[in-house]
Length: 246
Length: 265
Image 1: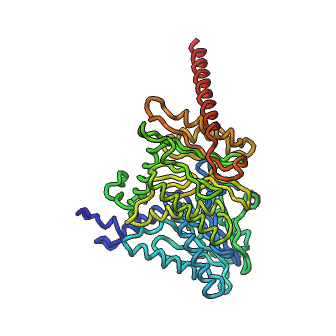
Image 2 (image 1 turned 30 degrees about the horizontal axis):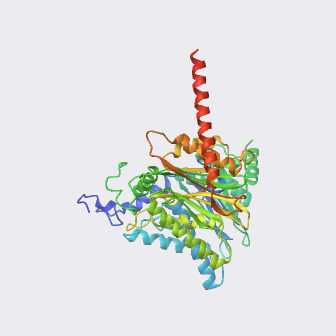
Image 3 (image 1 turned 120 degrees about the vertical axis):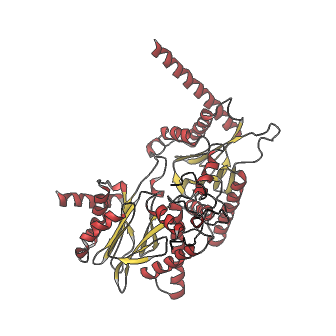
């Protein structure tokens, strides 16, 4: 190893100032490098998330480009960051969820899944051989006992439940937008939840969308399934938003 | 900002200060130095094509293949480090046979692509391993859904489904040519025989006579004509396609030089 005083940039050890550089770089890779922003919030009995859909190349099949994944029929995940790392994280989440169901005989609650995957992510920040996965995951689902839940799990293994949250390039602006509406959120029905998420994304990116430029997922009700909106359904919401503004 | 690497590029398990993993980017560069590989999703099948440079006059032309059959209904074309490619091919074959043994049916295209991608991605996570220096183009047919598909797995472990894709030295101009074919619109989608000709044309267009080494064209398809099995395109058809391609390129060059003459007047 070089005698450079910055040698702690290479593997997961503490710097003299008590920081973990590799983890901070992983955050950079997860948030700013992809240029994507994700917004999520929960209402009275539903929760939703939304992100941009960027198809870099006409030769690509747009249906293969997505950051939204279903983990179980009732839990959805929006993973931003490096897509290969996102897919690896999703694979592990699906395995953990299926394993829980097998062992305990009932579907995994969102908070248990979030904690499990956060613990797994933390291991990479403490071991030298594997790097942290450059992805921030937002998990949504409606819990039997606690109602709609939104959890965010990041590269460091932090996880917290939220009323509303965002991740990615414009995280701070999106969170500011949501904070202004946090009191009202508790009363939102599914349509309001979805539309607020879309409006928040529109406001922080400063542009209007078409149905093909964003992807939206939601879960409604204790018996609801995780659903991804089709382009027509997104257009319907966008029209409703435009009408309400006009 | 250390954009030149300088210390952050020594292992796969290191992020740079601006959040990049240099080892993965360098692996992609290894692919960029190798022969061009093209894939095209046509209306009734998928065609794969690789430009294999003939390094030595003593080499038997059909040795050291770049296109491999993974299962009866899928094939992979590799470009980059051929030896790394062999590992990927072996793994893909294992995935196919394991899937069939476990689930009793042929592996769906999407699952094959995802499994291969997640295998390649694994090598970008550990410090003790290096990423693969190959891109793999996977052509496959799913007998259940009766859909054919083309996917490309890159050294970073990213895999997308494509209408047309290119990897290797000539990928930028190849992509431009593929876009001109308008294959992303179902109305203008072309037939596999036409696809074979177009790919031969693109390869010959990009190959510069004096500069690049002489090459062999390996082509394969999964289509209605081959009964949805991954097979090499019949040699006489490749020959026909290459002749057509060369003629077409010559005609275009004449047309362009005619145009120039007219403009000079």
